[in-house]
Length: 431
Image (tube, one colour):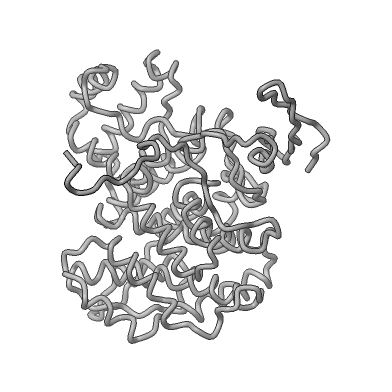
């Protein structure tokens, strides 16, 4: 990373210099850490549209060309050649595992899939109709009350034990939230199954009979996990990093990330997209809703199109569209109403000059809701599935942050616009 170039800023006739930092890919960055000391000024960047909050070697997005890299590998290649736990190993360790490393890592994760029996009683404190994300925020945060022996996060072994526990236990916690909502008994993990098949067993199996996962459906859900594993410095990842900057334990940090992800503008987008398709209802009404989406005076929004980062086709959307077709074919749902509606909506939007000029391409949420619904996952669980997958990215980002020698507790500045300093009047003088 080079810092040879200099950016200059002139303030009240005084010129100050700041180094320009260059990474492997992406925009160069002006290092303004000394701005306050040199000028008495701060920057204002609501929503952090032009601010790099950290240095990271984990994930890179080029929104202009529609590229997503995990540790330098294109998401398309990882989706084609690796399963989710291989991707988790990659994010966590920086390199893909060889055969021995893959076997050992999968074995380690399987050894951590059960949760403390006392933790299962936490669920009884929630109403049966509680939103599963509310349950997850509480239960994941409570993990720190059960695992005291590995809390020295300056110790790499302690960090990795906590990371493995989170990766292993999230499927169990998510499945238990679903079972609690439906009134069915919790299912223990099966270590003879791989990561995603085991999750489907805990979600959909019952004690009455042995659950046999469908390999096509397992592969589809495994791909969903891979596509959601990490995504640079988004809102929830930034939340995890900010919480972790205080020295908070990783379970609390992941709980904070889950709470942030719960917001409909972040993790709830696929549910909103599915609700939009239900509202449109039929292919014959697509033209009507396309027209509404263009009308500035109409509150209707075309969900699943466009992205804060991608100004080209979201590479995850292309993969998800193929998975959606495979799943519906496997289940005999090729003529599924919502899928046909989605394909027609995508076709028209990609041909319409309004959407083409604004680069409103389909994003990953456009098809993921249809896939999850076809798999039997209720809409209330969609964001839980997202959180399960993203935990891998969150915990990797957390470790990168706390092992960065330059990291400090997060403390954003503000532009204060409240009342100027004033004195408190005696009660009798107040009007």
